[in-house]
Length: 411
View 1 (cartoon, one colour):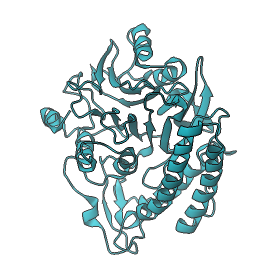
View 2: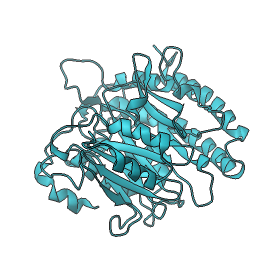
View 3: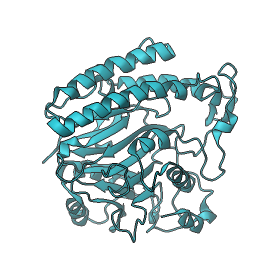
């Protein structure tokens, strides 16, 4: 699905996306990924700033997912993305146009949770949608992946759904598909996120190597892509000499947005690999200020402490990222709320928040790749996972204190 489709909708490209629930996503088949493993990706825009990773036991399967916290309570009916012990994984974006002008999304994330509880493959998910009472009260693009290599989008509205299979060369000639906040099967008069769709196309075209897509480039790059899809404005062109003097520029409707609160890329498996080798590369918090951390669904249900709910009901890494976000969007009534202090984000002296996040994350990915190699040989029972979680808790907190002067993760 190339830019030519966006041109078809160009006459409504001026439509802006609602503040929350305006996400950017993509699915990549094994034939298009650099290592032959499929993956699904979601950059999440949502009004709720408190994000956390959970592990839960559903009716049939255990699963891990990224979700909201409201007043200290985990919202399992507001899951953003996740995978279960069978290797079944799912994301979604609000479509906005699959029911015409009617806004009916009350079941969007409830179905996502239900799928993680009972689905093993794409066929199970289709069965779930088929058996739901109509109207389904959804308007959603579901990106779904299973351990058998199945990967597809389901554009689901009140009356039914349309499947777009990323393994079908007629549907996805390049082996991947993108969705923001419109469905291709919906009414072209409605929907949103066209500029972010175009930005993702631009980004992917820039990172493909011999036609293949590296998962790390997507989770670390798309989440921080600073070129606007419609205006083609590149914020690196505004990069000041240092971070000393504030420089505010408009930061509206890029892939990362002021209301982006998390991101997750779920990397699947090859044939004959254990579904528990599935890896969720997770930014539990504002992606521009939050280090990406891998999550595995272990037999003992372990998680890094910094992505889990603490005694105050928060994720430590999410809180740390929000503290840094305040430096990018300081409260000032004289400016538009979407104006970002680019000097604090990036500068030619290399002291911007994004520039100081990178070496911390480099080390996390270096160590995580070693753990992944061990998991693929020994399974998730290996002590390497728990040892890595302990290390990443200490390392990330120490580096955030050293780099940014954060004396505590939770204020």
